Amino acid sequence: MNRKVKNIIDRIYPISEKSFQKIEILLNCETFKKGEPFIQRSQRNEKEYFILSGVCKSYLINPHGDEITIAFFTENSILSPHSIRTSKSISNLYFKTLTDLELASINAKEFENLMIENIEIRNFANAVLQNELISKVEKEIGLASLTAKERLIEFRKKYRHLENLIPHTDIASYVGITNISLSRLRKDLIK
Image 1: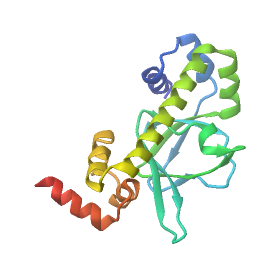
Image 2 (image 1 turned 90 degrees about the vertical axis):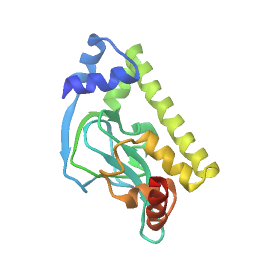
Image 3 (image 1 turned 120 degrees about the horizontal axis):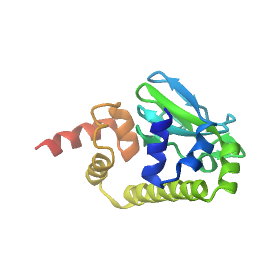
């Protein structure tokens, strides 16, 4: 587990072994089965997460009771930072597994303390925040300015292997179309 976390960190912002050891001693491993919610909206959540294996999504529930997918998180990545996905440690979103999921977690307050005392960890955390902001802005721009077909093409570029791994209803929701429209677009793109 620990080497996987180090590799995830180093792909975002490389840190020394000495700095990583400060994180490593605070890590916990968590596993969840496919379809299992692991963060509930309006519930306390005080962790940062590294995705070691599997796929999950963040989502909200609209007034009709439908899940609206906000983002996907894949193996060897990081969940949205605690400071973005919570307000006063209360989750703003739901998170659910789309496959079996293995996570490494760390207490958010303890991680924040590491950021204060260690410049490498602070720079890593800032890079994570910046990447999250860029991703959210790109999605907003895409929803506002691209056709449904273009949004599906962008989804395929960003998440190359997900289309045949996760429910198409989640993909349709993410790109802002109905499942029927997604089915039609997929057929059109095969031609």
